[in-house]
Amino acid sequence: MSKPFFVFLHGAWHTPKCFMPLTSALQEAGFENRVVCPALPSSNATPLPTDWNADVETIRTTVSKLVEEHDVVVVMHSFSGFAGGVIRLVYIAAFLVPEGFQHSPAGTRGNMVPQMKTDMDAGSITILPEDAKNMFYQDVDDTTAAELSKDLRPQSLGAYWGKTTFAAWRYIPTTYIICKRDVPTTVAAIHWLIDTAKASGPHQIDSVIEVDAGHSPFVSKPQWVADTLIAEVNRTL
Image (cartoon, rainbow, N blue to C red; front, top):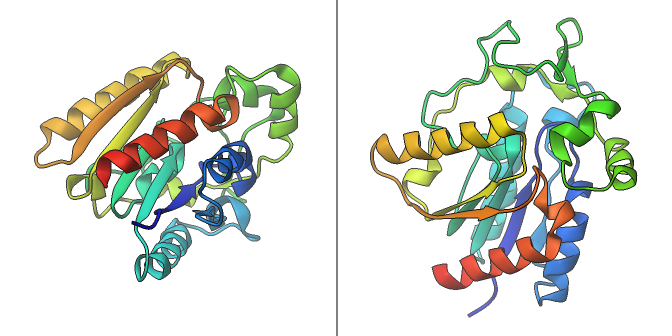
Protein backbone atom coordinates (compact mmCIF):
# COMPACT_ATOMS: atom_id res chain seq x y z
CA MET A 1 0.00 0.00 0.00
CA SER A 2 1.41 3.40 -0.98
CA LYS A 3 2.11 5.90 1.76
CA PRO A 4 -0.41 8.71 2.24
CA PHE A 5 0.32 12.36 1.72
CA PHE A 6 0.41 14.70 4.70
CA VAL A 7 -1.14 18.13 4.16
CA PHE A 8 -0.03 20.52 6.89
CA LEU A 9 -2.13 23.62 7.58
CA HIS A 10 -0.34 26.29 9.58
CA GLY A 11 -1.92 28.52 12.20
CA ALA A 12 -2.62 32.24 12.23
CA TRP A 13 0.34 34.63 11.67
CA HIS A 14 2.54 31.78 10.43
CA THR A 15 3.91 30.52 7.12
CA PRO A 16 4.63 26.95 5.98
CA LYS A 17 8.22 27.47 7.17
CA CYS A 18 7.15 26.64 10.73
CA PHE A 19 6.74 22.96 9.77
CA MET A 20 10.30 22.50 8.45
CA PRO A 21 11.63 20.51 11.47
CA LEU A 22 8.65 18.16 11.30
CA THR A 23 8.68 17.70 7.53
CA SER A 24 12.40 16.88 7.69
CA ALA A 25 11.70 14.18 10.29
CA LEU A 26 8.94 12.71 8.12
CA GLN A 27 11.15 12.68 5.05
CA GLU A 28 13.84 10.82 7.00
CA ALA A 29 11.16 8.32 8.04
CA GLY A 30 10.41 7.47 4.42
CA PHE A 31 7.81 10.06 3.44
CA GLU A 32 9.93 11.78 0.80
CA ASN A 33 7.82 13.93 -1.50
CA ARG A 34 4.73 13.06 0.56
CA VAL A 35 4.42 16.34 2.47
CA VAL A 36 2.51 19.39 1.27
CA CYS A 37 2.36 22.69 3.19
CA PRO A 38 0.21 25.28 1.39
CA ALA A 39 0.56 28.94 2.32
CA LEU A 40 -2.81 30.10 3.61
CA PRO A 41 -3.75 33.53 2.22
CA SER A 42 -5.18 34.83 5.51
CA SER A 43 -1.62 35.39 6.71
CA ASN A 44 0.39 35.15 3.48
CA ALA A 45 -1.39 37.36 0.93
CA THR A 46 -0.96 41.05 0.17
CA PRO A 47 -3.37 42.67 0.67
CA LEU A 48 -4.88 40.46 3.36
CA PRO A 49 -8.23 38.90 2.45
CA THR A 50 -11.31 40.13 4.28
CA ASP A 51 -12.52 36.62 5.19
CA TRP A 52 -11.29 33.02 5.19
CA ASN A 53 -12.76 32.01 1.83
CA ALA A 54 -9.36 32.11 0.15
CA ASP A 55 -7.97 29.76 2.82
CA VAL A 56 -10.84 27.34 2.28
CA GLU A 57 -10.32 27.40 -1.49
CA THR A 58 -6.55 26.85 -1.12
CA ILE A 59 -7.13 23.84 1.12
CA ARG A 60 -9.88 22.43 -1.10
CA THR A 61 -7.75 22.77 -4.24
CA THR A 62 -4.69 21.22 -2.58
CA VAL A 63 -6.55 18.26 -1.14
CA SER A 64 -8.79 17.66 -4.17
CA LYS A 65 -5.81 17.21 -6.46
CA LEU A 66 -4.13 14.78 -4.11
CA VAL A 67 -7.14 12.57 -3.34
CA GLU A 68 -7.58 11.77 -7.02
CA GLU A 69 -4.69 9.29 -6.65
CA HIS A 70 -3.61 9.19 -2.99
CA ASP A 71 -4.77 8.84 0.58
CA VAL A 72 -4.40 12.11 2.47
CA VAL A 73 -4.00 13.00 6.13
CA VAL A 74 -4.77 16.64 6.95
CA VAL A 75 -2.85 17.99 9.95
CA MET A 76 -4.18 21.24 11.39
CA HIS A 77 -2.52 23.56 13.86
CA SER A 78 -4.26 26.20 15.93
CA PHE A 79 -6.37 28.55 13.74
CA SER A 80 -6.41 26.16 10.78
CA GLY A 81 -8.59 23.76 12.77
CA PHE A 82 -11.52 25.63 11.26
CA ALA A 83 -10.85 23.57 8.04
CA GLY A 84 -10.56 19.79 7.34
CA GLY A 85 -10.51 16.67 5.11
CA VAL A 86 -9.79 12.98 4.31
CA ILE A 87 -8.66 9.52 5.61
CA ARG A 88 -7.70 11.06 8.95
CA LEU A 89 -7.75 14.51 10.50
CA VAL A 90 -5.14 15.47 13.08
CA TYR A 91 -5.70 18.54 15.23
CA ILE A 92 -2.69 19.96 17.09
CA ALA A 93 -3.79 22.52 19.70
CA ALA A 94 -6.35 23.51 17.08
CA PHE A 95 -9.94 24.68 16.91
CA LEU A 96 -12.23 21.64 16.83
CA VAL A 97 -15.62 23.26 16.43
CA PRO A 98 -19.17 22.41 15.31
CA GLU A 99 -21.13 23.79 12.43
CA GLY A 100 -22.05 27.46 12.82
CA PHE A 101 -19.11 28.34 15.08
CA GLN A 102 -17.89 31.93 14.93
CA HIS A 103 -14.76 32.95 16.83
CA SER A 104 -15.63 36.66 17.04
CA PRO A 105 -18.78 38.60 16.14
CA ALA A 106 -18.30 40.48 12.86
CA GLY A 107 -16.89 43.95 13.35
CA THR A 108 -15.53 43.22 16.84
CA ARG A 109 -12.46 41.80 18.58
CA GLY A 110 -14.58 39.67 20.88
CA ASN A 111 -12.93 36.56 22.41
CA MET A 112 -9.47 37.77 21.40
CA VAL A 113 -6.65 37.80 23.94
CA PRO A 114 -4.81 41.08 24.64
CA GLN A 115 -1.73 39.90 22.72
CA MET A 116 -3.79 39.94 19.51
CA LYS A 117 -3.28 43.55 18.38
CA THR A 118 -6.12 44.47 16.04
CA ASP A 119 -6.14 47.19 13.39
CA MET A 120 -9.72 47.63 12.25
CA ASP A 121 -8.76 49.99 9.42
CA ALA A 122 -6.14 47.62 8.01
CA GLY A 123 -8.29 44.56 8.75
CA SER A 124 -5.38 42.82 10.42
CA ILE A 125 -4.24 41.24 13.69
CA THR A 126 -0.58 41.17 14.69
CA ILE A 127 1.42 39.47 17.43
CA LEU A 128 4.37 41.47 18.77
CA PRO A 129 7.74 39.67 18.82
CA GLU A 130 7.93 40.00 22.61
CA ASP A 131 4.63 38.12 22.95
CA ALA A 132 5.42 35.30 20.52
CA LYS A 133 7.22 32.98 22.95
CA ASN A 134 4.39 32.96 25.50
CA MET A 135 1.80 32.60 22.73
CA PHE A 136 3.36 29.93 20.51
CA TYR A 137 6.75 28.67 21.67
CA GLN A 138 6.51 28.02 25.42
CA ASP A 139 9.00 25.13 25.42
CA VAL A 140 11.42 26.52 22.82
CA ASP A 141 14.66 28.24 23.83
CA ASP A 142 14.69 32.04 23.68
CA THR A 143 17.05 32.25 20.70
CA THR A 144 14.97 29.89 18.56
CA ALA A 145 11.73 31.59 19.62
CA ALA A 146 13.13 34.99 18.66
CA GLU A 147 14.16 33.63 15.26
CA LEU A 148 10.75 32.06 14.69
CA SER A 149 8.99 35.30 15.61
CA LYS A 150 10.73 37.05 12.70
CA ASP A 151 8.64 34.98 10.30
CA LEU A 152 5.25 35.90 11.80
CA ARG A 153 2.93 37.85 9.50
CA PRO A 154 -0.17 39.99 10.01
CA GLN A 155 -3.32 37.85 10.08
CA SER A 156 -6.63 38.66 8.42
CA LEU A 157 -9.06 40.06 11.00
CA GLY A 158 -12.05 39.08 8.88
CA ALA A 159 -11.00 35.42 8.98
CA TYR A 160 -11.93 35.42 12.67
CA TRP A 161 -15.44 36.62 11.81
CA GLY A 162 -16.35 33.70 9.55
CA LYS A 163 -18.80 30.96 10.50
CA THR A 164 -18.06 27.28 10.00
CA THR A 165 -20.48 25.38 7.78
CA PHE A 166 -19.20 21.80 8.09
CA ALA A 167 -17.61 19.69 10.84
CA ALA A 168 -15.43 17.09 9.11
CA TRP A 169 -14.61 15.37 12.42
CA ARG A 170 -18.15 14.00 12.46
CA TYR A 171 -17.41 11.84 9.42
CA ILE A 172 -13.63 11.30 9.18
CA PRO A 173 -11.47 9.50 11.78
CA THR A 174 -9.94 12.22 13.94
CA THR A 175 -6.96 12.50 16.25
CA TYR A 176 -6.51 15.36 18.69
CA ILE A 177 -3.08 16.19 20.15
CA ILE A 178 -3.32 18.18 23.38
CA CYS A 179 -0.20 20.19 24.21
CA LYS A 180 -0.05 20.22 28.01
CA ARG A 181 2.46 23.10 28.23
CA ASP A 182 0.39 25.43 26.09
CA VAL A 183 -1.16 28.54 27.69
CA PRO A 184 -3.29 27.19 30.59
CA THR A 185 -6.47 28.85 29.34
CA THR A 186 -5.87 27.31 25.93
CA VAL A 187 -5.46 23.82 27.40
CA ALA A 188 -8.69 24.23 29.37
CA ALA A 189 -10.47 25.46 26.25
CA ILE A 190 -9.22 22.46 24.25
CA HIS A 191 -10.60 19.99 26.78
CA TRP A 192 -13.91 21.85 26.61
CA LEU A 193 -13.92 21.79 22.79
CA ILE A 194 -13.27 18.04 22.67
CA ASP A 195 -15.87 17.23 25.34
CA THR A 196 -18.43 19.50 23.69
CA ALA A 197 -17.80 18.00 20.27
CA LYS A 198 -18.22 14.45 21.55
CA ALA A 199 -21.46 15.38 23.33
CA SER A 200 -22.89 17.24 20.34
CA GLY A 201 -23.84 14.20 18.27
CA PRO A 202 -22.16 11.84 15.81
CA HIS A 203 -18.37 12.12 15.69
CA GLN A 204 -15.25 10.18 14.68
CA ILE A 205 -12.89 11.49 17.38
CA ASP A 206 -11.23 8.18 18.17
CA SER A 207 -7.82 9.25 19.48
CA VAL A 208 -6.87 11.94 22.02
CA ILE A 209 -3.15 12.12 22.78
CA GLU A 210 -1.41 14.35 25.32
CA VAL A 211 2.16 15.56 24.94
CA ASP A 212 4.35 17.49 27.35
CA ALA A 213 4.94 20.31 24.91
CA GLY A 214 3.96 23.89 24.20
CA HIS A 215 1.71 25.22 21.46
CA SER A 216 4.05 24.23 18.61
CA PRO A 217 5.36 20.68 19.19
CA PHE A 218 6.34 20.39 15.53
CA VAL A 219 9.12 22.83 16.46
CA SER A 220 10.07 21.60 19.94
CA LYS A 221 9.42 17.84 19.44
CA PRO A 222 9.42 17.23 15.68
CA GLN A 223 10.51 13.59 15.94
CA TRP A 224 7.77 12.81 18.46
CA VAL A 225 5.15 14.43 16.22
CA ALA A 226 6.45 12.56 13.16
CA ASP A 227 6.39 9.23 15.01
CA THR A 228 2.89 9.94 16.32
CA LEU A 229 1.55 10.88 12.89
CA ILE A 230 2.99 7.73 11.34
CA ALA A 231 1.50 5.60 14.12
CA GLU A 232 -1.90 7.19 13.61
CA VAL A 233 -1.69 6.58 9.86
CA ASN A 234 -0.74 2.95 10.36
CA ARG A 235 -3.61 2.49 12.78
CA THR A 236 -6.01 4.04 10.28
CA LEU A 237 -4.85 1.94 7.34
